[in-house]
Length: 132
Image (cartoon, rainbow, N blue to C red; front, side, top):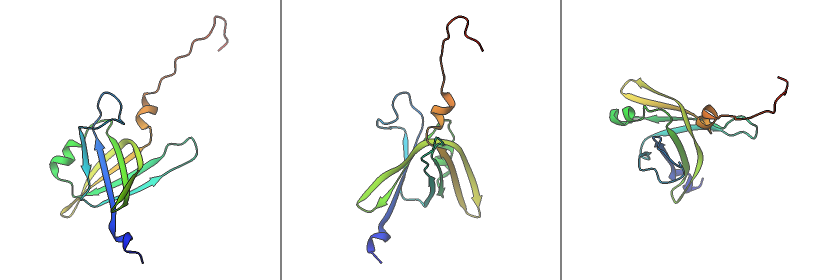
């Protein structure tokens, strides 16, 4: 077995919404690197959005409280010691905190483009006499 498998890394960025482009630097983002993070990402080639379920263990109380905002963006990056790459970017749909004994578990369910789909508008005009 290769030694590289033991140097896995995951980085989770949780960004509060700001006005402007999300792709730019996020001064309000929280970076989670040294906690236990597990995730399940479902990618599709259909019109259905990609989804992710991210579970983080033992966040501090202050950090858990700061995450309870609407329209939080989630970036999941994973890889090995020398190289990590982005594998999911999306909007948090639900964020739940659960206590199990002495441990706290935070479950974040997200979707790719959730906010855009929820706020999308269609503006169409028709000429006079167009039937319903």
